[in-house]
Amino acid sequence: MDRGSRLKKKRRRRLFSNIVTVLLFILAFTLIKDKLFPFIKNAFSNDSSDYVLADSDMPGKNDEYNKGENNGSAEGNNSGHVNADGDNIKTGNEKDKELEKEMAEKKEMLKNTVYINDEGSKVVTNPNDILVLVNKERSLASDYKPDDLVIPNVKFSFEGEDQKKYLRKEVATALEVLFEEAEKEDVILYAVSGYRSYGRQQMLFNYRSERSGIEETNKLTAKPGQSEHQTGLAMDVSSKSVNLSLEEAFGETIEGIWLKNNAHRFGFIIRYLKEKTDITGYSYEPWHIRYVGKEVAKEIYENNITFEEYLGFEYDAE
Ligand SMILES: [Zn+2]
Image (cartoon, rainbow, N blue to C red):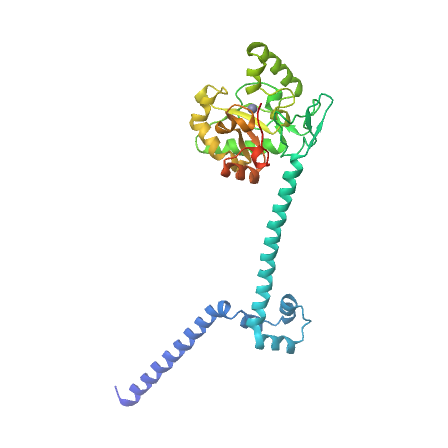
């Protein structure tokens, strides 16, 4: 190889490596420009008016726009972002505070939703509220019946048509999801008893108190109008491991434990807890779930409190 051709080869190599360097530079620039220099991308865009209007509300002279860009596109962008974020944070806080305030007002309101009827009993004025509190001190009117009762598409412990199958629509949907999710974990639940009319409560109470006396009956069976089942928000649930019955042993079964740990995820609470009978006025009922919506259910579950405590009640059972 003579000197001339060696020189040519060298030049070619140098040219080639220069081209590669330039290409690499372009490639690297393309990759990082969007991340590091968003304004460059915008500067390359012909449609400047969009950008100006979107970010600064300035009607778009290119001069103004470029000036803004050069002097402080970072600043401009940043201030835009800061404002946006700042607003968001502020709005978030305000929303939280508003929600908190709303909830506090709601709780206060919920406590005061009773009137005294002719017989001297406290009757709730908000029977249709998802958060209605019904207990031994707060009855439902004898003629109250929810107007959106439906039969949830779940397994029942019995066959045939019965008012016990009904729940309010929102509750029925939530129960269907709960049962489905339980089944995915091989936990097979059965619905036993949902809606219970005033008339049926009367019948049940009379029947039971004739057998075991009013005092005993009152521990487990609500007086007419005092059953949550009349709200259409409650369902008694059981499993084959306790022969589909409603008994305390259900709380120790795989199904009962699953229900205790998961009901809140679907908006339900175990309404009558073992260690809270003095507050609820009822014996432990691991099978009785009450719908209150996911948010409230979560709070009640996590704090291990009763619905009465959640609402700020101090309830003394007699
Ligand atoms: Zn029940």
